[in-house]
Length: 251
Ligand code: PGA
Image (cartoon, rainbow, N blue to C red; front, side, top):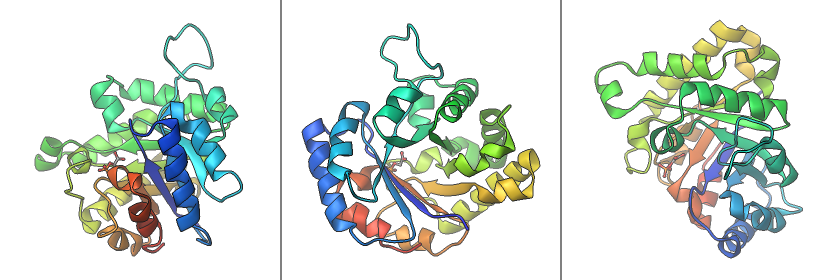
């Protein structure tokens, strides 16, 4: 059975002091929550503060990104081992904001997946189509390409460490979440592609999340469907009570 994952992506929000407060609130509100994994992804500069705040709880830490090399002359970059040393369990890879604003290509996404797996991180691969691609009926082709390229030369033995998040670009930060039907449809396309790459058994081990304008109001719908293994939450994860309500929505 896949354990649901509810992951809060704080993006470029929170100073260390703010991260500490938010993480403490979450620890308090989520006390006693069972049978699901809950993680938060603060900015790099707030990882240490968040780590101190969640110490001794079941909450886990994730990174929003990582560099594709292990070390070297890459000014401003952060490696997988630095993130592991700060207690990160997961690392987002290929978030659409990285692809759009930082020019990340499928090739770089692939290299980052390899870097995460070379280290001890569990990559959360983000994929999803743009609005015009959905309107043109091309979302399936986009998802297949993004999954295929991201996982080039990745062995099926890593399946248990991989999570994929279906995040349609048009749903991110817009308040316009995909319907549960569309999320399930996309998740099936992604799982089918994983089956083609790795075979049925490894593919069945991969968690596939939905992300894009998830809120306390719509989370229960996603939670009710066994093919949605959790959610990746942006804006709503910055309000402790709202994120806690999402975690408690089901799964
Ligand atoms: P959102 O962001 O929940 O604010 O739409 C989701 C994401 O970017 O992962």
